[in-house]
Length: 456
Image (tube, rainbow, N blue to C red; front, side):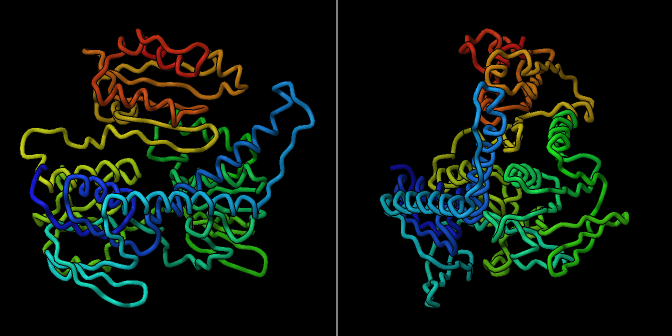
């Protein structure tokens, strides 16, 4: 058995914490997980999974509206809001149940409550009934996640002025939803509620939606929103919200006003590190984020951090990889050379319509840095399968090193982009070349053929 038997105390049972727990337990550790909300993670099971379930429902409704173009008639679908609510609750319960069962099957002890470090080796767990237990730990893992950021000017009430935690689903279906924030979460909400038939306005503080993404990619999504009747307030920064009996008004710094029935804040998140006892340790942290090295180890030799609070890419797949990394490092498996987590090679996706996904080096970033790259792009309009699907929007863009042909990045806009990006992610991680992709024999007809064409 690798390493010595160690006592792990993991504060936070999200993707990072649970991955660490199961992996460490299999390696022979004595593991305790402390989770206050839901095993599997509030951000994951109460934000990510419900949003994707709602988006899936909206996508089916959108397909129904275009059914006549596929040779069908008299096809329609209306939204049963309560049925959707029950479906989301059922998915959450099943995922939490399966995760809890996995942990217990590995011998992991789960405490429902909050955890706080009293020292660098002692954790106090406070159960929901108020009782406390002090646990000695050889290894402490912090994976407490994050929560929606709420500015002082936003009178959040959970009914008309919402954060993301209030909107999966909201108390009632909005007649006119105003979304503040045009990052990943914001645009997914726009797509979701417009699909449900709501009128939607999006306040965009920068000059494009998805300001951190490739402008060409963002442009496709902007055009899709405009085609669907979304009201875009480009270059508008929200600064106050006023509520009346049946309306809400968002006042912007340039004098523009958006008026609707509900407001949703999607302006980022803040790490949940304010009540976990960092002040009782010498852990280095900044703005609430724990500073970690390539092994997710903090400035204290037995305290690690995973997930949102580590300040790395805040997605579940990264947190899961960090959790496994922590378990292996703490159990002594990484004393020799080993592969580190390369956050720049992590794939990410945005579940709008069309979907957006990317990995590795972005074209705009490379040009801004003066880096020499080769970019090839093929539209889905050239794909037989896209035409069969009646959806030829978007493109595949492959970024490679012109000297070696190695694939270093890529972007996909279009149907099933979140699935297709896996091929480019594998290419980037494994150091494959454009020739490797071009010479691969993909299925015909399939959307994946465009990946091979873009690599030629």
